[in-house]
Image 1 (cartoon, helix red, strand yellow):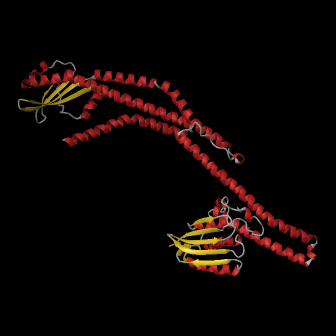
Image 2 (cartoon, one colour):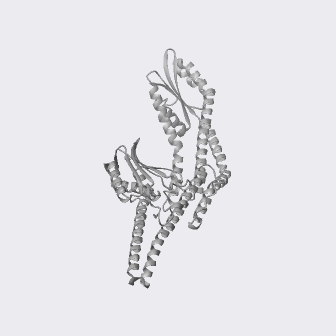
Image 3 (spheres, helix red, strand yellow):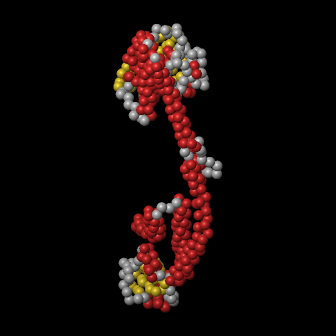
Length: 478
């Protein structure tokens, strides 16, 4: 029985909820259909959302207040009429024929009494109504006919009787309707005050976004340093402004770096071109008949051509890295394979420095063998360039936790503290290295970094000016 009541209550709640939400669904569908056909501003959409929310609240308040008021009236009606009528019916059950005289209530439209097996034993009217205590049927009768069915189980003279009393509650329904109309109209009248306030609030809320849009439209290459004003913004809008400004900082830094890179690359290309042009002009004027001058010009042009080719290849490598089209052909190999090759090649090409190669452990790595070899060469070539003759260059290999470390240490000119953060920048060269004798384009360390980072490795640097430099390459090993 308890489960049945819970099931009935759940059904009732579902029906009532569907009835209450039905107008809201209609309104929502209407606004969705309109918004699909028309393009509204954000301010209008916010205002419309607030307006819809207000209407929803008005309907909910009207419905709940009306239902509450009707329940209050019905309870009062029970106390003043129904309880008294039930008492009279109980007293007249010994002689059912006297019930007509006992009840003198004009609000009673019908009365039916049933025995223990729900057989009708008395009725005001000549109809065979069935006993009902179903709340859904009672609500349906109230809504349709303004009739309230009160059901009661009476124990009298050791017998069980079931009673249905049909009351005319049209006056209660009317009072409730008046209250509902009054609440709805008074709440709806608040729209006159609500609309201008919401419109003003929405406009004020959207104003920072409009300002952001106007400022963003004015940003070009010529004023890329323009930023949004975060004063007066709050919460998410402030966070949005700060995020936009941070993004513009990154774009500006990238743009300036690109400009600097193009400028430096142009400068690097201008020098060999100027040298070649000078030799060509000299040959054109008088040098082509002088064998010594001709050979000098050919050698110089060849050297500068090689220099330009080296620079262009490095620039193309960096460009492929930026476009993320740089591919590494990785394989599993012993790191000592390339380290011993580098040792042998280095000792063959340089006899002006004192070298120490010591590879204390070996490890398997999964990497592009040629590019890793090229990266290590770059660090060794740098050490050779910036270490005076008879200086010492040490190359060590050892395990360092999950990495295999390759350390290149020299006794050269070192790196100034202010230059350390910039040594991996493209085309950057410290003052000490800006001469033709040392050579280079300032791209070697940038390329080495791309290779090592591309293999999920790390690079550590230690240096003191005048006391040499120490570079440690860390590669993940298997």
